[in-house]
Image 1: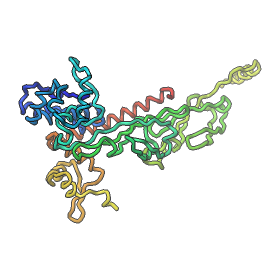
Image 2 (image 1 turned 90 degrees about the horizontal axis):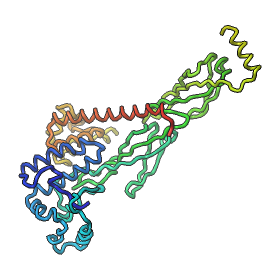
Image 3 (image 1 turned 60 degrees about the vertical axis):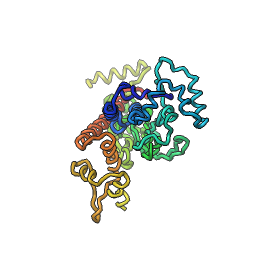
Image 4 (image 1 turned 90 degrees about the vertical axis):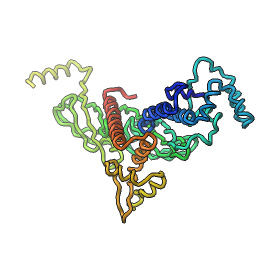
Amino acid sequence: MAFVDYYQALGITKSATDKDIKAAYRKMARKFHPDVNPDNKDAQKKFQEINEANEVLSDPEKRKKYDQYGKDWKHADQFQGARQSQQRQQQQSWGQQDFGGGGFGGDFGGEDYSDFFSSMFGRGKQRQANFKGQDFNAELRLNLRDVYTSQKQTLTVNGKNLRLTIPAGIENGQTIKIKGHGGPGTNGGPAGDLLIKFAIANDPEFKRVGSDLYKTVEVDLLTAVLGNEITIDTLNGKVKLKVNPETQNGAKVKLKGKGFPVYKKETQFGDLYITYLVKIPTGLTDKQKELFKQIFETDI
Amino acid sequence: MARKTLISTDEFCVHHHIEFSFIRNLCEFGLLETVKIDQTEFIKEHQLEKLERMLRLHNELDINLEGIDTIDNLLQKQQDLQKEVISLKNRLRLYEDFD
């Protein structure tokens, strides 16, 4: 995307006065400023666009140039004269594209300024104010068991290796911010941040709510009726569990401290809730059925 | 050891080309807390990000302290709500099959 309609970006007409431009810019800046729109990429892009528009339209000389060549930007090379040949090549390649009638909408692809802006005014003198760079967003997919303990991972961000310690107990949907690993700042402004969102898949055995875990355990009828000791798997090994006599189907027990580690408090753990699922025997023989009948005839 | 996590207000003001009165006003408004050690005032490291955000809102958007306070509260509310949404979504997964 090479061209930005700066008037449209600021929501003003070509006849706008300096005062109108200033007012429109202030209004738009308050709406789209990255500090009031955290984690909003669209707002960030829009903010860059309106800054660029303000930079050009608030400078009478630049505005004149823009007004003169703006729409017919394909001829920009004529006023550029014999500038760098590389720039000319770019302009020629853009010239081959058809932008007629359909406007100039498109993707800036994370660039600070449109190429059009650079081709007209150069990149070195864009504005005096410095701005924080763009925040980068990434998603990291992990399994529940991966985040049971803290682990170190090396990510490659923009060609640079980044060592990252993922704290145990991180939640699905949680975002961590790595300061200064986003896009470079403008005019000496600070670099943006890298925002990593964690997508943690459910586990077939355990379900998690906060730092508590939930698991369903099947028990046979005899164990449910008379009680027994069973062994169950937890995330940190097997534990023996005493099933009380006359345990009902759906009964729950809490294993304190056998849940998930609390985020950034690795020595603290949530609880593990076990729900018993009593298995009713199937395929009983006539004799077994008769014995059951006898039991129930005893008024239980 | 503790001093490592403190940033001198003088250094901050020089770096950002601002007057100390801005920091003092924020403190008076209850938006910032400074620590005084040997006649020098320091900002706690964890408040730096918030302070820089407030400075940007003030410089770039001409927002006064009342406005900054309001934005700060609303952003905090937004963040709390986002956390609640994540927590509720995760709770909902209890009733869903695993991925």
